[in-house]
Length: 357
Ligand code: SF4
Image 1 (tube, helix red, strand yellow):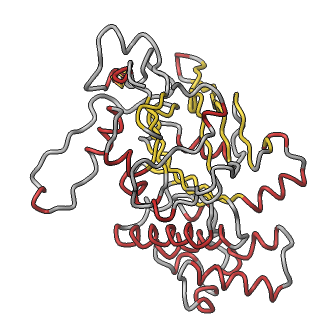
Image 2 (cartoon, protein in one colour):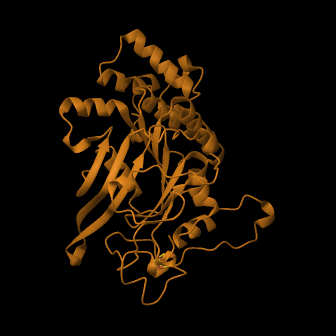
Image 3 (cartoon, helix red, strand yellow):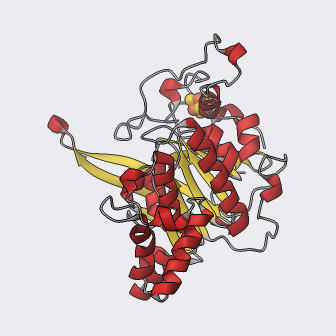
């Protein structure tokens, strides 16, 4: 089945195989409506490139995705795949060139001022660099309390209690001491936790987490991932988790969508995508994950051939064909492969699977 009609696109995929996250999977009621829906979203930019004049960058080129309440969907891909632009479109931070972004069944581009303000309370972001949200000249208390002040929530005493509760939630304790400190006195992991606290203090329903653990060291990364999992399970927050690291996506997400040059090339339950990848690009991403077993340290890992993708020069046909180890002459450069359901809940855009399903 090709993903052509929105109803099919919005269906909740079956979890045919239990994954690490299957026990925490919130999608128990198929009648629940998605919290966030992206339908055929395109984001194209025009850029000036030296002698070549204006060029169109197809950062996102027709992505359809839906997130159920409490669901975590990871968008995985290299730099230039369009994953960050897609995340920003989900928050209304960039305007799609075409397609629809709906939050709670409402088109976000048509929000009234009051609806937009309510959306800003319910939808938050965590970025790679905590200084994107935390002011270096404000104390941690002031930074975390600022969204409450902006939205006029609570008395001073109530705000203080909510800030302290958010700091405890992200294990920044003793909270009274941490609250009075400035960001430069904290470690990188603690600063990122303060960014999480700022996003959590408004008790959002949806969080865009854009590479939230990639700037911290390995031990802080593991702690932050456990913290995100705990918040997911305890608070039932819906996350769009943007990452280049498919290993962390498996740890945190219910579902993974792999992006290449602005398109989703494979999507499905996280465990299924990592254990039984079908698309050659997904296989290459998984093969590149470092092997933690020291006995395998001398093993050479396959490296993706060719240049990283340039979204202003999308190849004809299957965009992955110049780098694909399984490319078929006379087939792959001629047309864009459609995203089709190849295994239960697993959607793949690749001509290798023509004739299946
Ligand atoms: Fe490779 Fe062809 Fe499949 Fe593209 S369609 S991923 S080039 S085999």
